[in-house]
Length: 316
Image (cartoon, rainbow, N blue to C red):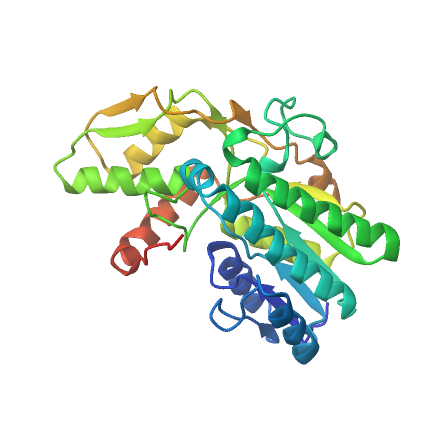
C-alpha cells in the first residue's frame, strides 16, 4: 500500500481499533479516518452510506463490534446479535457499493463449533453447533465472514476475514460485569490486593483451556494482511498455544502481587472446554505472533495501573 492510502478504521477508539491505528501510524500511514459512535452510528444504514459517499475510503478495517464476556452475552442476546449484524452489514455493503479496494473483517474464535476438534481449523466453520453462551455474537460474526466470502467469490474483491483468538491489552474493558476473562482477572486480583489480599472468587472449575493474543500482535497481523494479498478468505490469528484458566489465574495473581486465596465457584459455567487456534495458514503466508503471554500481561497490568481511574462504565 501507498503511505497516503485513505484507510477507514471502524471502531478506532476500542481496544482493537486503537491498536491498529497506533500500528499504522508507526508504519508511516497518515491518511487515517476514524469516527466515534457519536459522530457516526454504524447501526444506521443511511449514516454509513452518507459517510462512505463523502469520505470515499480506499481501505476499510472493521474493528467495530458489540463485545463482552459470558455474562454480557447471556443477558443481552438480542443486542449482541442484532447490533453486530447491523454494524457489519452496513460497513460491508457500503464498502462494496463504493468500490473499496480492500476490506478486512475482524471476528472471533467463537465462530467455531463448541465441540470442534482441537486445534480449531478454518474449515471447521459451520460443521456443528455453537457454544450457547455466546452464540448470538458468533452467528453475527459468521454472517460477516460469509458476506465477505460471497463478495470475494462473486466480484473478485479483496475482502478478507481475520479471526483472532481471545484478545487482551491496553484499552481493554476492565468492567467486571461486561469484561472478558483475562482483564476481569487483572481487575479482581488487583482490587483484592488493594483490599488486604482478600480471597478472589472466579467462575467455573479452572479446567477449560484458552489461548490469548496481545492486541498489538493482532494489529501487526492486520497490517500484514493490508500489505499482502492473501490467498484465502478466512484466517485464524493466534499464538497456537494455550493454558488452563487456573494457570492463567495463577500467572495473573503473581504479576499483580496478590497473596490471598483463589476460590473456584463451580456453580458458574465454564463455557467451551477448549479453544485453541490452528494458525498454520497465516504462518505459511509469513506472519506469526511475537508477544509472550507473561510479557503481554505485564504490559497490560502496567497500562491498567496508569488508567484505572479513568475507566468509563460500559452502557448496555
